[in-house]
Length: 120
Image 1 (cartoon, rainbow, N blue to C red):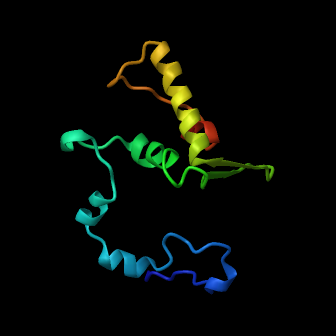
Image 2 (tube, rainbow, N blue to C red; image 1 turned 90 degrees about the vertical axis):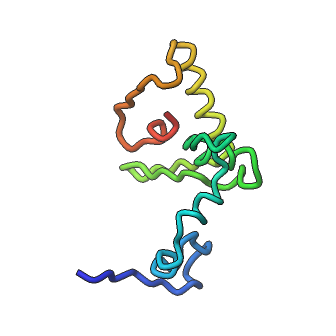
């Protein structure tokens, strides 16, 4: 089945989306460009996904931007800014550390798609 994107006129959008033209972005994508947008670990030792997804934004100019919008089954809405997620994820990491969880240990979170899942 061919790709059939939903096209909306820009004037209908409250904000310009990060990915407005998927086909164009996909055709111009390179892994080298993607790597340049990431901070990475010192000395090229890899990536810390929590840092890339939350911490670098929480400490930068995007701190007050909405990072996560959750809509519950009953229509309730919760919004978390990058700054909020930074505080909450660090708090959870501290709890894990105090419980004796060390780097390299596996932690499983059994939760539905609620904000706490993403915070964990």
